[in-house]
Image (cartoon, rainbow, N blue to C red; front, side, top):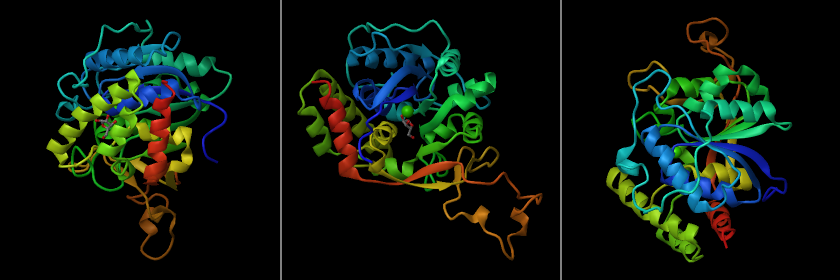
Length: 334
Ligand code: BDR
Ligand code: CA
């Protein structure tokens, strides 16, 4: 298939965040994406900080004269708030210095903007969450009629292997597991970019230098952000190069062949003391198997759960192809 010829209409829901910022810059400029709005949620930092970072990035892109940016939920649905200051710094986007933003906030709450855009649109819209799923879960609960207007949900979150905030859980899901449950059970197609692939989408020094060599202000901003991100990821995880999590969603939208995905059942753990916020991914299709010893999983037993695959989970990434998409996106800035 290669690069999409018809632009995909999206709403990007995010918590910038260095990697969210790169995702915004890609979505704002790539012709394969028709960005309808940026909606902001608390996550990597408090809402006040993620909103300021979003406005700074949208201003820096120079593409937001008629794309609304709205502030959303400042707290998760049920759990206590967690932030990721260790990775993204005190501001949520430490590193670059910004001028005063020239993009302002839409007066609507992000949840209402999401609802309005979906209900008013003639075509379905793809939702692209790259932060905790609070805004999207709330929008679905507040106005269930939006669900049929969602084309699909392409999200960064979860893992079928190891977590990054607990051994079991990934940050975006852990930060609001109840909202994630609403999203994963909403019935619309889901593409899940989890840590399993984002940990292979590394911003190596060579890739950072390649984008920086474009020389435009957005490419230089990318490189400045990656320098801070590389340092914090090295301190916390020991990675030599930071995983560029959130831009994988934009890369999938632009060129799905960057990734290999597998359809499987994904459920969010809401009760486990050690596994709260884990995405339980049925990689082997165990729920679909019948036979001796599996009776408990079939209808009504204590372990019975709703069944059937609900998510295309990314299991591999073509590193060079992914970086071509990132590079080409920044090249559109001239
Ligand atoms: C996710 O958590 C955040 O820190 C990043 O922005 C990304 O969305 C990775 O676990
Ligand atoms: Ca994020």
